[in-house]
Image (cartoon, rainbow, N blue to C red; front, side, top):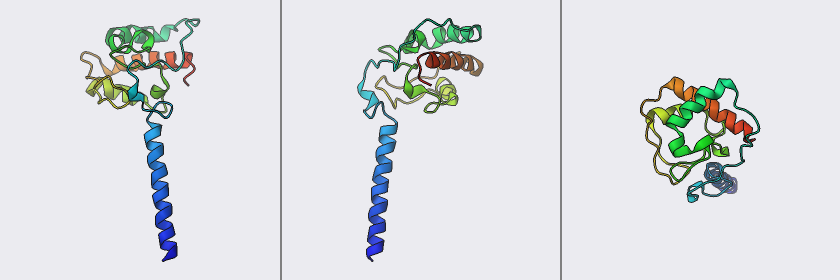
Length: 144
């Protein structure tokens, strides 16, 4: 009986720790990222490195489809979060998450900007080019 009680206590403690990691793992620096209405990027892009030619189409498409909400160079605005932020690094938001968001929209879950609508007129190939540009910006900012 004593071993059974100890196992239940241990499992309960482990479940609590797991719950804490899940809650903190989807937040910014252990705080609720949604509390920030105008989040700051993790690092500033220096602008010292010229955009490689392979990402120029992605930049053009980003400016057309994404920058009205996510800002120039993905720095964020009052209408949308920065994409040059650790929350959007590949280990947390894989490329497929960007594809899904553009194609289907996404419910607000990290920030208090409201739900992101699907983006009309953007193709999966457009999004692939946009992702390349975003990942380049993130690397320039030292995010990954």
